[in-house]
Length: 366
Image (tube, rainbow, N blue to C red; front, side):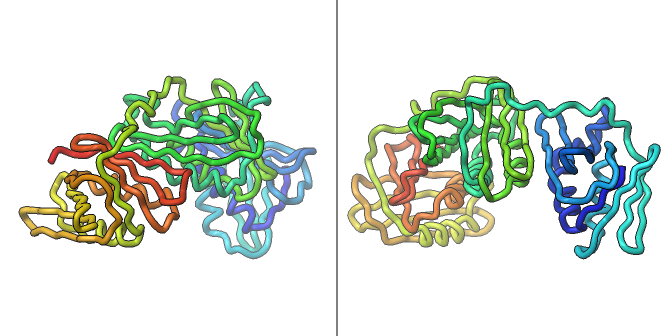
C-alpha cells in the first residue's frame, strides 16, 4: 500500500480516529490500533473499542491498494509532531509502514489486522432522522454532564433519546438533577427511543462534523452518518425510569431572574460554601428579591441579593452549587425561571422563552 495525504488532513483524521481505539488491549492488540484501508472506494481510517467505532473517509492519493494496522498511540504522536504544510506518504511493506514527510522519515512496526472486528451498522434503516451535526454536538456535550458517572445503574449513566411527534427529546439524570432538552425535527413520522452511554455520546460529539448527520438505530446500535464517514455506538440495554413522575405539577413560588445576575451571584457565593458544597437559596415575594447564602466555618460567609420578579410564598432551600451552575450551559436565555414546589421538593429551572429546556435539581437537607 502506498498513499499520500495532506499533513493537516492526516493529523486531524488521526486525532479523531485514535480516540476510538483502546488505549491498551491485552486480549486483542488490534483494538489498540488504527486501521488504514486504501482501495477502490478511497482511503479510510477505522478504529473501535467494541463500545464505539469510527469509519472515516480521507481525501488523498492512492498509488497502490492495501490494508495496515498501526498502533494508535504511536500514530497519534507522529501526527501531532508534523508541521501543517505539505503531504505525508505512507508505504506499507511486510510488517512495517514507512511515513515520509519532507526530509523526515518514520518507520513503524505494524499490528496484524486479520482480527480487526467489523464495525456494525444498525439493521433497521427505517429508524432514521436527520439533524445538523452542530446541534447534535451541542446537545450531547451539554446534557451528558448530567448523567451518572457510576456504572452500577447503566441506564443512569446513559442519555435517553426519544423521537415522537416530530420532536427529539434528550434526557440525562444522576438522581440528584435531571436535564431534558427538546429539538424539533423536519421528519415528523419517525418514532423511537434508545439509550446511548453518556461517555460514548461525548466521544462521538468530539468527532461529528457541523453539517448534516443521519442518525440510524436499532435495538443494539446507533450510527451517525455524514459525508465524512460513520460513527457507531453500542446502546444500553436497560429500561429508563419514568422521570416525569418526579416533575412537580404544582408550585408554591416562582422567581424570574436575569441569567447573568444568577451566574455572577452564584459564582461569588460558592467561594464560601462548606465541604458539602451547599448554598442556600431564598425567595422573598414581599421584597421581590432572590438571594444566595453560603457559610463555611473555616473561611466565613457570603450573601448575594438579586432583584427578581417573585410570585408565591417565601421559601428557603439548600442545594449543591455544582448542580445549580450546571444549568447555565443548557440554555442561552437571558432570563431564568426558577419554580419551587416546597421544602424537600425539586426545583425546576427553565429558560424564559426557551421551551426546549427543563432542568430539575433536588434540594439538600437544610
